[in-house]
Length: 346
Ligand code: 11C
Image: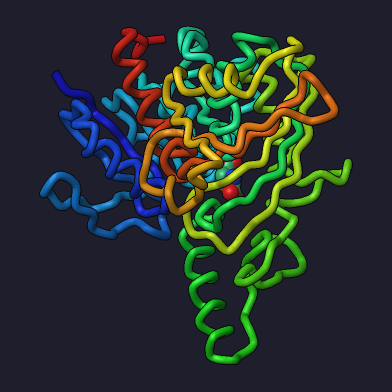
């Protein structure tokens, strides 16, 4: 048995990874529709040895589609995800358009798979930096309780799309040639000022909100509470863009609900958790890095330390490929679970 799958945003950095992941997972596909905004329509894309023409996504493109994976920007999702759902497709949306809608489950399968049962045609895939953090913290929350998270991120440029990857490459080349670096995209395409990311660190991802936090930081705060079903959880975030192509890294401080825990107990809990790989041995300088995590689907954790002055406090270093677990793999994983649990009807 196979399913009619639509990939919306098939030409983008995440869309490409969605196709690679569908192929790698040998996803049961009977028909594949590759869709995009009008700008990218007409491009040819190969999938499993067959060439497909990317078509402009329109409401009628979703007739007969079983699962639609959206990653073409919030405005495309807002306009077309309800149209796809109306036509009987289950949408897995990788934009922020519906994430905080109380009617829309926001899912990381290792954390809140059961929320899939509540879907009404649209399921939201969380922000990449949120996904890897909640995947690593859920096993600790389940075992010991969790009252506070303070996170600082070290995020890859690919989170801002293929254009940001090109901008970093160009700037690095310019710098090494002794030229001035052109900056016209980062930190945020639509904002007033732009700064080079090459050989730099930008403490702004997405636009500033009235409270002084950026939208990326507020996404980490609000999405974490929704996914973990923990409105009382204290979460604060600082999000920083680095000249790294792939994988977000995060320095995470947590306060657990139990005292007297040891680093070894935390490490054992993480090592046993689904989707988590513990890489933590200071004696051999073992810890994950963006390069070591790139291309892999798991979330890697290292540098587990106990706060010297706070018995319930622990520090962790959490790294994952932002385009895979942070986007394409989490979406495909949701699609696999929908099939597995017979949840393709509303
Ligand atoms: C970044 N986390 O690294 C963003 C990209 O809400 O899905 C993902 C944006 C989102 O810029």
